[in-house]
Length: 156
Image 1: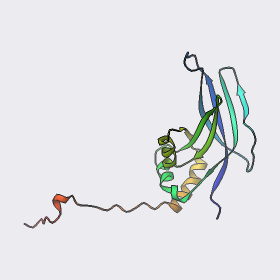
Image 2 (image 1 turned 45 degrees about the vertical axis):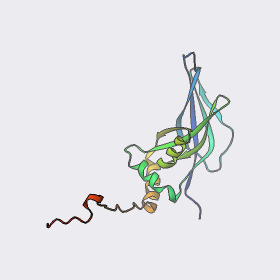
Image 3 (image 1 turned 30 degrees about the horizontal axis):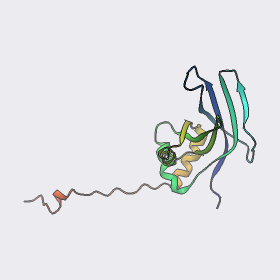
Image 4 (image 1 turned 90 degrees about the horizontal axis):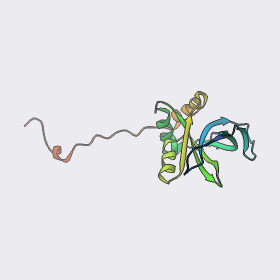
């Protein structure tokens, strides 16, 4: 059974800084839909001398049933986002993983990775919501009594 997936490309932005310790800063600027199977090398979209934008094709957002709670948390956060793990490789910001799971992004951050996020488009949120409603089942909360109340009766 194939997992639901969307082919995407990540737009990375490099800004020149007036800083003696760091000459530039990279960030994820956008995640855009891509035609299925389109791959290729990153390509420069624009460069005005201060800011440059690079398109990195060939990435996918794949949904997994065991990440349904992470998707639910993302959708109910108020502003759903797309998380992108990226690394600096030879002075270039290179995206590696794109996910919609709050839990997966947290694990990446806990592992010391660089993870940025961008707002999720409404049509992607609808797609994610359909998957989440089908696969996320909240665990029932068990009420436990503190040890000091065990064995106590109210009628005494």
